[in-house]
Length: 480
Image 1 (cartoon, rainbow, N blue to C red):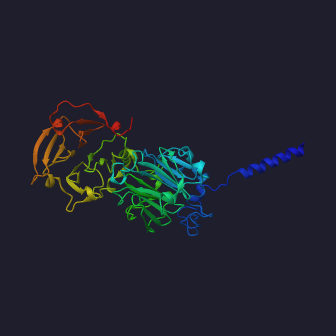
Image 2 (image 1 turned 60 degrees about the horizontal axis):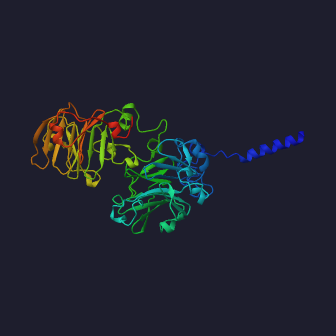
Image 3 (image 1 turned 180 degrees about the horizontal axis):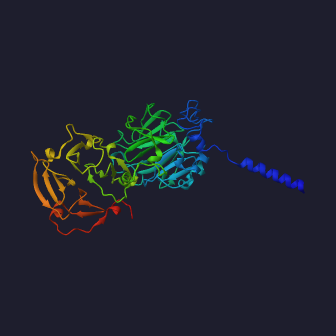
């Protein structure tokens, strides 16, 4: 009996040893001396000096070591296999058989979000993913059904899966070449590029240093070599910007030329997820400016001629018309590099954006990605014939009068007059207004933590009873 017990114990120990997973998680890939880090000299990653093939057996980089790394958390600095938003704008980060939903929270098995993947494929990882947003009102897509304007495409090996509302569409998966003719298998990354940002509605596919521009209407593929751009293991279009991810870093690039401008690469953890010890804000004041729902008052508010709505605070701005893809604070100098921070008022007129900072006015051509008009900035007095500090300013659609707010008064200036001069001055029922804008629905003014709506500038100027106040936090979806 004793001999039998010893034999059983030995068998149990052997079974446990064979079942234990190997200890080669992401910590060794990114922290160790001979690591497989994206920049390591002896890296097994596809960028390393002694690198194995990108999909090879010996690679320790993209698409390998997928199963153990996710449990360490994305804040450890992992390299994602794919990144894509869904039809509601929630961004998914994929690694191996795991996925993270949004900018914070734990990992999940990818089949919790895309149930059919395991039914059709021995799931190991996702090569690439992108959301295709098709506007049924545009000429290129009038032949599509109303529901056929939001898909998530997932690429695995030589197959592509199309999801609508997280349900696999009939007939999928399909071979990649049957859906996107001329596009190779085993992709590294993919990203949508809509008309206006690319020449036509397109998808950019990445494999090694090659980029395949696939025109969705003509089905024509143009191949380019972007060797200057580090090989992308995932790509993302977010709020009109394009990002190439590699290792735990990312680079912003132009979708047509691949041009990179600015100080890149940057650490993904500072921008695309909430990680302890990471983030934009280096002090409490900066964090207050960054956080959409902080109680710090905003500096300016406007809507341009293209319907883009901006709100400014400190050195940052937010797009308010991009709720579908989430609201995010951006440095002002990433869009208007000459201004940098602390704007006082902003208004739009005649396809130009006017930014007032102290006693200077900067005018940008809004049709040309906000290019500063030659000869600017100029003094506010020279440009608008107004003296003193400007608190807010707005122009209503279809008009040519800018309403300039200074303390408890509003001055009207005809922008078509030459020379320009104040045509009317109105007393206001407010001691101070932080920001103001005018749209088809009327005038909105921001005062501290509240905003007030008026049907027109005349009602703002002549009304002596304040309308019902509303919470700016509610306007921004904070739900405090």
